Image (cartoon, rainbow over all chains, first blue to last red; front, side, top):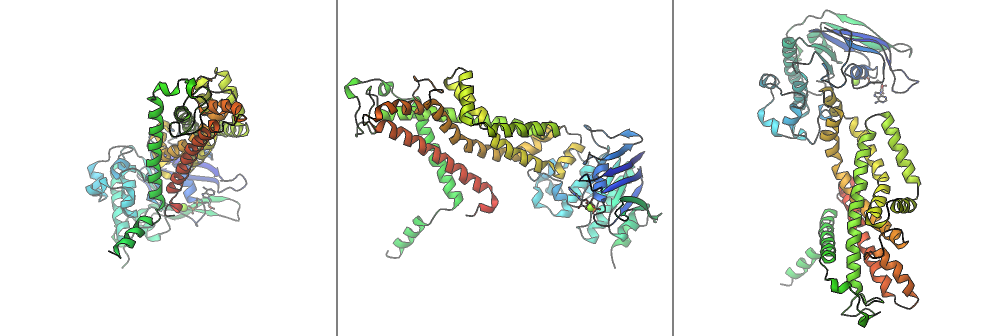
Length: 225
Length: 285
Ligand SMILES: Nc1ncnc2c1ncn2[C@@H]1O[C@H](COP(=O)(O)OP(=O)(O)O)[C@@H](O)[C@H]1O
Ligand SMILES: [Mg+2]
């Protein structure tokens, strides 16, 4: 199964294209890294792939089929700021189970404590909220996960824990992951391949292979000595 | 003893903060509205009946607001009129609020819907309210229903504009996109995520529309296009009393007019205080 973005062009304003004819392809079970300068349009591309942004040119498809608009989207997106991903007026248990009833296995894999379920979002830390955001996004119906700088705000040990859980569940469900990050260590450890989104001479953006075939070694090495 | 007294005094005189003042206002307003409504509903009809033995009496202890040219007690007429005004105000501002709930949510469904709503808002803000109320009221055959619908149909534009901007802001939140990506319908998202966020705004909006609704009802009725002359409306009282002003019966207009103004101002201040309380920057004033 392949998630494909083809000939994607997009600008927030008509005269200023952020993305110009970008192609991207992500397979089931694949972990693809995406790097690029700040402001190069990585988050914008993520929003387009996940259907948040709809006014783009080009096509986004899974195995040639257009994305569903009123059904569960097999492409789920997680951002850097989990506090924006939760309704501040909802309790964590309602937030968690909005899409589907999250299994006990997934909860324990992400280290989500039962007592957290009764809390409000402002009573949890960013890292704790991000675990909820991931747990509810990794449903059996999810085929692709887009992770846009999802562990930028947590400490190194938490980052390892979170990524171990993601990779574990993704492997079981054969989910393909797009990892947007600035951290070379993380990319080296988790990605099979990394591509780069860059702007040349303001002529637009293109993507290229940044580095390929990272060894998928144990995550333990990510913690700095 | 000599130290306790001034301290006690200081405690009493300490100015109340905004929250306490607003709560006090809410209590006073509720008491006022309940008193007016119950007294107008359960009023002894004797008080409103004509009694030519006591025509045109100036205010006294027996008739604090005086009596009119048919000997009716003006305090009783004023209370009945205020009760009617408050009922009209409650219905009309509820209609206005419901219209803005509907249009606000409708505007967020898409670009076309949004342009339709903003066109309607601009249109209704540019037409003079009074003219439109009179037209609607006449079109519906006058009476309470005509006035309520006329006032209700003209006061939603401001609130709709506020609600539309608010919804636009909420819709950019990630959790809305996430909910849609979980396959939730637009209506579901509106009901579970957007509407609960807006309820305080709607309550405040209703309270702020209320004084306008009352004043417009009174002016339309005063002009003869609103409630029928048989109803004890403040607008009717005021227009009738105009004929007697030259005869020196000042109390016929002064007390009913003043009472209406007090009710309107009190609700307006209440709405303003609630608005400030809901704006976190001003909450500690
Ligand atoms: N909602 C928006 N409206 C207008 N411009 C935006 C918006 N979001 C991002 N941009 C602009 O688009 C460009 C790409 O942003 P983004 O996709 O967030 O980049 P990245 O994630 O690679 O840092 C930036 O120049 C940014 O200022
Ligand atoms: Mg970004």
